Image (cartoon, rainbow, N blue to C red; front, top):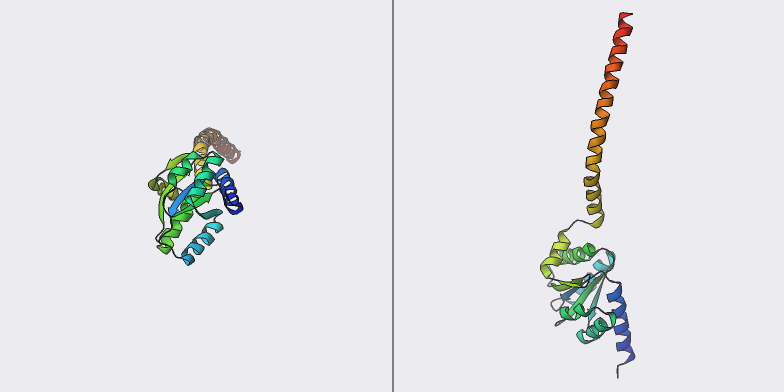
Length: 175
């Protein structure tokens, strides 16, 4: 018979799994309590959560939430990074923490859009620029042909206006 604490833990994990856009499983066995606290603090500042989970409870929560692939990332001492908005922000936050502190935090696997991603793919996500920057680059690329067309069309009109202005000045000088 499950205890109320276990049921609450399962309900909490179900909520996190259904809300998250990315979940990254890590092996935290090499971290001290202070390092884990610092990790949580840095991730929270980025809008990302870190939760140490019991594998059995997480497996039950995965079944209840419908995210069956979550079971495949559970092994050993598991801490999960939950990202809710930008998937790049979660991957980048974990990668930055590991680089800054040189902590012994190993990225195992992740889940994004219901698919399992490898540690190399998580690091590739961390290397991407932020979403806003990517959107700005895309809009700039889409805007470039239109701007070029406007410059070409404006060039002929400007040329005609300059010729007419010079002719007006020439006639004024002759008179």
